[in-house]
Image 1: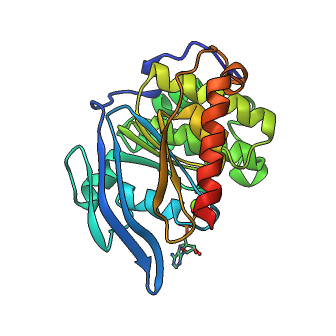
Image 2: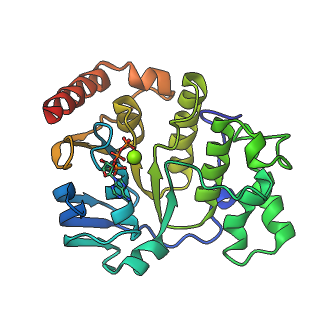
Length: 270
Ligand SMILES: Nc1ncnc2c1ncn2[C@@H]1O[C@H](COP(=O)(O)OP(=O)(O)OP(=O)(O)O)[C@@H](O)[C@H]1O
Ligand SMILES: [Mg+2]
């Protein structure tokens, strides 16, 4: 796999991407029946901005992401993507990668990834060819014909992530995209995603429980409280000075912001 600094051409992952989309979340509230999950959240993501959402387990991160994507509607407040507020309109602009990969079990790894291109009207052969060209970079070379059930959890997650990138949507909504990966592969994939987004910018909302990952990949990180989630801190991630991930996350400025985020997280859990 080409983890960091690899040449990633925009053309490979983005056939005909629309211009960047901004996201506006205003006064959003949500509950599952009696269970209050989101308490008055305001959040803005500029076009091609990357915002990380971190928060304690069960606080409502996935729910908030589903609300943004148009998979749910808020009880109160409004969510707009490129000024479009209705849920089908939001859904049409988002490529959503759920926390649990939803690969089609009867499709091979390659066909699962290529599905994103088929959905955009690409012919089967061409879709497979374009998806296959990215398999090596995703550490999936040799597993094209393998069924999801026979892949490791990390590999399934990478197939799902590739499919998300290939969907050609301006917004990527990623729910713990690297949670199933071992630490080394995870660090490599973070470096890879950072490089991919530099080459092929998207507006990204990234849910993760990993503060370091959020700060490394995002421009801004919103720290959520325990349920019902509210934003307890919004931190700007320092510009990475080192070209590589490991250098970036050990930079003193980075470490200072990470500590601040950890403090906010602890406060929000009380
Ligand atoms: N469809 C649902 N119906 C009812 N309750 C739900 C539903 N989905 C989630 N919940 C509950 O809502 C709360 C928030 O869930 P959510 O999945 O958004 O949290 P999360 O922050 O993503 O958690 P995790 O860190 O475990 O991924 C949890 O208490 C969860 O049990
Ligand atoms: Mg979740």
